Image (cartoon, rainbow, N blue to C red):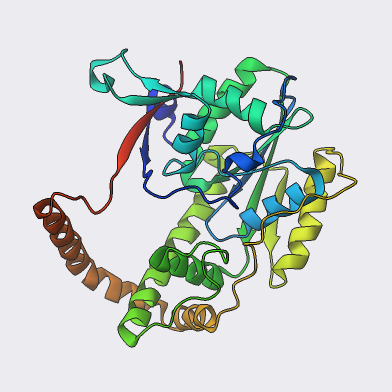
Length: 327
């Protein structure tokens, strides 16, 4: 964590708004509070995790038991700007020449909106990936400014089988299928695609290991209440862990349990198992092959961008927001 970044007035939010929010997604308006929460925020629960660790499944189970929607509210590429736009927490900056006429997410307004729209019984939950910790620290400071007596709970979720996690992460990135509601199964892949997927999975494995080290580094001083680890039987662990979280937060269980969305089935495709087994046996080879292929990949990306400019239609319409942390 770069402490100097937290003293800045603005933090960059490099968002991509070309991907719409699906109806089943916890970020959709369907999961906003029917009646805005009007009380003071007393508890802030933060689940720190890594991609494909099972965090969304855990949050879904907590929602099923209590109705509390815990989600990636600090994910900058889609969720944060989309929610901020819906909640009226975006304006144009006029405070600094470098940010003039630039869209800005006002953290204080965004935080207040999250409390109104997503908190229940004085509790708000956030699922924060390790790569988004810089936004989390800024939000926690805002929350404590509003209520110095705020109770903060932090858990860290780690998936035991890193090879399966890396394979799942690579498949989701390459196919853009992050949930089973989008497609029932991963499409069949040719030999070259499998090799490419193995290279990607090996890189994901390395990235996930680094993120684990970052999250557990003493310098972050993240005082976790629990270190949660999912073993082989993920579904059993989800139910048991959710019950522990609900008990620790003293959340009231709903007499009529909510129905969570159904995109949280465990990945059981043979391709996932094959990729995980392959990178566990040939990790070094795939990492080296990835280093060799990286210049070719960059060249291909530049070529695609050049073609896109010739057609006057960018391949991806990217927007950049700034997060105003002292507004």
